[in-house]
Amino acid sequence: MVEDDVAKVEIEEEESSIGSSEFFRSEEEVEFSTSEEDEKWEDSEEEEVKVDWTVPKRETVRQVKKTHYISGGALKYELKTNIFTTEARICKLARENNALIILDRTGSLYIIEDGRTHRIEVGIERNLQFTFEDFAVQGNLAVCVGRNRKSVIAVNIEEKTIREIRNHNQRNIQSFRKARFLSKDTYAVAGDAFVLIYSAKSHLLLSTIETAEQVLDIHPDQDNSDILYILTCDRLITYSKTLQAQTSHTEAIVLPECISVAGDKILVGSSGSLSIRNKYTLGLEKEYSNLEKVTDISHSPEFSISIFSNSEQENGVRIIDMQTQKIVKNFPNKKIFTKVTSTCPSKEGFYIAAGRQVHHLEIKK
Image (cartoon, rainbow, N blue to C red; front, side):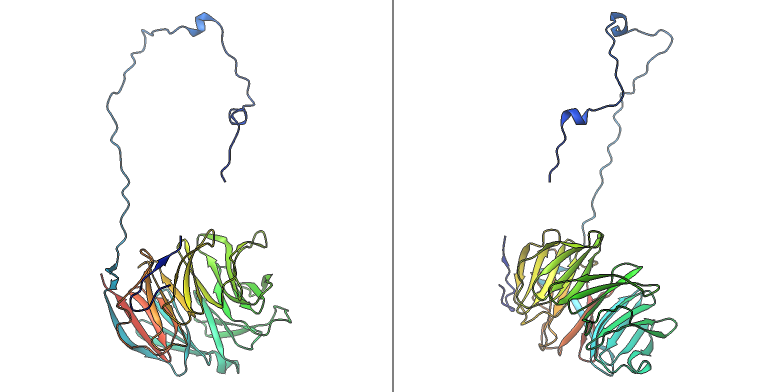
């Protein structure tokens, strides 16, 4: 366990074979000559054999060392506060291409690009009287879900059209908690003890995953499109879409909240801690207790940095250097933020949503 100020980290620490007969098996019969004439070497007077004794130059492939932005546990950064304000509390941030997209609790979708802001009133247009919880965006499609709502809201950002998806036919689902794009062609929503996978084009239900416990979060594996990580209220599961079954799971996790995939690691937020697990074995590698609860995690592959936050704690946001797996000591350096509800990577660092305000953390070399 690690105390926040000191940021110390306590570290917890098929081979196939093939027989020689099978390896050398050949369906072609090989004839061996026993004739002494065939075994003799003959010099040819007609052709002159030229031997090239020069040694070819060996080309060495050099790996470019990735820039490390953290030195001595300190991050060099510039924080631009209150770059944008919404009318209601922000529930989710996302960046798609060059646009920052914001969803607030009432269903207002803000698209900020090239200094201009477009706004789509999803809740008002469809007369949706519920609290929005999450959304996922890819291209021009945003998929929104909310508390106490059985339907999925699909928004075409370019055409500003809104469609309510009701064809899941799952009577046991009372509301959806999370939305994620699994690929350019599919997206998934999680609610109660179900994960529903839809076509991004037709919005038809493609498959249903049912779990024994309530599903809290889902995340695709960027390296393997067949794998989906499912966080339930009890454990973390690796699920194969091809096999339509779970392939591995963790031991019981106390009060889990959210997950994020960072390279070959999975970050799991829970009540009282953030843990790092191996993506392939799900084994626990490290654990941190810097916040009372971790409700949101995002990762920047560009900077090899992850940021995690607690939506119920003032100034509850921390940064972890994924190269050293150590907590950054100088962020935040003072009480700046109210309760942080969402974060997402930007080209320069991270966007941070706290209450109705968006801040921008720019990382310097």
